[in-house]
Structure formats: structure tokens, C-alpha cells
Length: 306
Ligand SMILES: [Mg+2]
Image 1 (cartoon, rainbow, N blue to C red):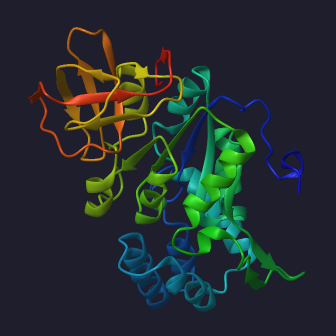
Image 2: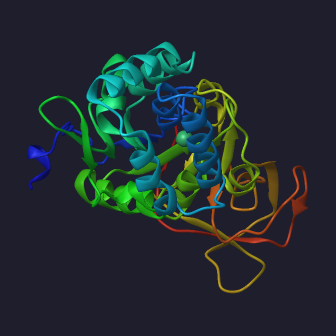
């Protein structure tokens, strides 16, 4: 299917910036599947919630729980629509203002979820988000549950990076940032320029430890890294830090802040360069000077991340 024929096709993203957002426990405090389970009573809810918890913490692969939860719940179209309204009632309080600000800075928001597209669509409309990547549900003429789209990538572990790779081919963005709370979101870090873990509703230690940055409110994306962060070196450039070896640049380096061992902000002393280093670096402590560290910069030009 050509990109422009896909539901929610967004024009004008080419060489722009994609902000990809998880839905459950990120844009909303809800886990949609748990809410669908709640409708069926306390026993079903407890069963479903335990499975969701284990999947989001990485204890169980997504595919081990996905079909099972839906078989237990058998959600009707009306129940899915009700969860759609519940997502809006439980929206992350800073989401609307944050997206308004970031759009003005050239970011295009998308939703990428292991949840259900018909449940998420109303929240996406509320936020003005055209493109929702999530799992379709199928109902019969009476609105009874029939099945889900078993071929959709986010029904299994490793599905989110697969979708992002496709989005990158479609949009050819300059920068891609992913925000989410779960292990399935963390898996995207190999496909994105920056993965931001999200801990407002639930802090998952594995995600926090692996994230390039960790936010406790969506407004942190404006007030924190994206706005106040130093300029990014290179137009789509990658920066790598080495302890030695062949380099194009070797300068005293001062680590300004540490998000995790995967990515951190740096300031090259005396060079006027500052930026975000992703990949290749070991753990560094804030304020530690690394006079012998060499930095290799590819690409050219500088521009703000946010
Ligand atoms: Mg989530």
C-alpha cells in the first residue's frame, strides 16, 4: 500500500522530526487492556492486570499474553468505545500543552502502541494526532468480539522497533524520539535517536536504567532535554566517544549530565561545541572530566534537538 493510502497518512514530515509516543501509562494513566478486563469483573481484571504487569516489566514476552488476555476478555465494540472515552478522561495532564509547544518547533507526534487502535483513536483525535500505530480489533455485525490483527508487529516482543523502522522508511525523518514506560518501548532504542523513559504512572527499573533520558511528566520534554539541552552536533550526525584510536577530534571533554550509560550530554571544553552523545560511550559521572577522551564527529552543521 503506498504511504499516502495508509490511514492517518501525514504529509510534510520528510526531513522533519518524529516524536513517537506510547499510549498506555504514558499519554494516559490507563492500561487499556486492564480496563477492558475490569468491565468483566474483579477476577478477570486481576488475571489480566497480572499478565500486563509481567509483560511490561519484561518478565513475559508480549506474544505470551496478547491473545490470552483477549480470549479471556472478549471485549465488545461498545466496551472498547468506553475505554476510548476513559483514555481521554485520564489523559496525562501536560500532554496537550506539550504537544502544542513541540509542534510549533517542528515535531510531528505519532502514537505507537501495543494497545487497540479503535480504543486509542478518540484520544489521538483529542490530541490532534493523525497517525496511530496500534492493533486492530475485529467485531461481528452485533459488535461482538471476533479477533485481533494477529499479523500486527506490536502483538509481539520486538514489534515496536519493527514499526519504527517502517515509519523511518516512510517519513525519512531527520530525528526520531520515542517516549514510553514499558520494556516494549525500551526495545526501540536501537531504532531511534533518543529513547525517553516515562515514569509518571509507573517506574519500571529496567526501562529507567536503559533509557537515554527519563521523564516524570510529558512537560519535561519541553522544560528539560528538548528545550534546554545543548545543541546537537551534526545534522543527523552520530557522535562516538572512544578511549583512544583514530579520531577526527580530540578535545578535553566535560560530562555535563548523565541520563544513563547509553547517552549523555556533553560539552567540549573550549570548542564551543556541545551535544548529545548516543551509543558507544561507557558510564560517566556528572562533572567528571575526561581530558584524554577522544570524540569522533561525523556529519556537519549544528542545530537544536528541540
Ligand atoms: Mg505503556
